[in-house]
Image 1 (tube, rainbow, N blue to C red):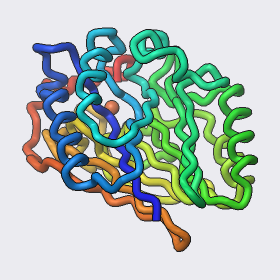
Image 2 (cartoon, rainbow, N blue to C red):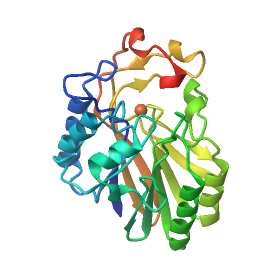
Image 3 (cartoon, rainbow, N blue to C red):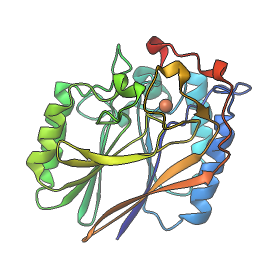
Image 4 (cartoon, helix red, strand yellow):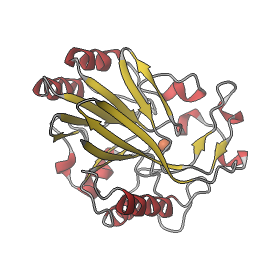
Length: 271
Ligand SMILES: [Fe+2]
């Protein structure tokens, strides 16, 4: 049985600042303490993008300091709040795959975990470049006969909520590659700050709420009417074995108080 952890939407900001009213660095420290205490038997941790709020070097350096306390091996990738060149300056160019993006692969027994960087250069939508899709197809081909789990920042499926406008764009080539493999067991994302699960184009998916505020599951109305909650702080605990895959959406922090609406003035250009 493979056990690993997914943490998304860290939204780290420079020291002395809050991210939309939340001390996200403190929250990440709590998440890491929770993982070290409760999940020391996990094989590794994947940080699934929106590592920082504004793609700035001080935030990435602060993140690196927090990650030093994690007692598990870890893998990083990027979301729409990240900046790839600044990230690679801070963490080292070796984290870029041949695709040019922060993609990686982890083999653990009968399971291959593929981590994809869905940061687009000019959009908050999720983007996988042609080079990444070629890289993905090659990694899937190598894993013929093994189960595959994919982790990326952006949700791959519209969820019936206003943020569907910024989920993974042009997803059909991605889904076709996964279907061609024949045994992709889960796609795990953050991004939407909501806990959901479903099937998209024949591929099962899960989204986790993540490290910062969560979005109230309000399915209608404009984005500026949707309440945001201060909690939970949530990680994904993935159990993968010969019989299947389970993603536990585990809260390390509750606190479901509604935040003041003005914290979340909705601007699609800066979402
Ligand atoms: Fe986020």
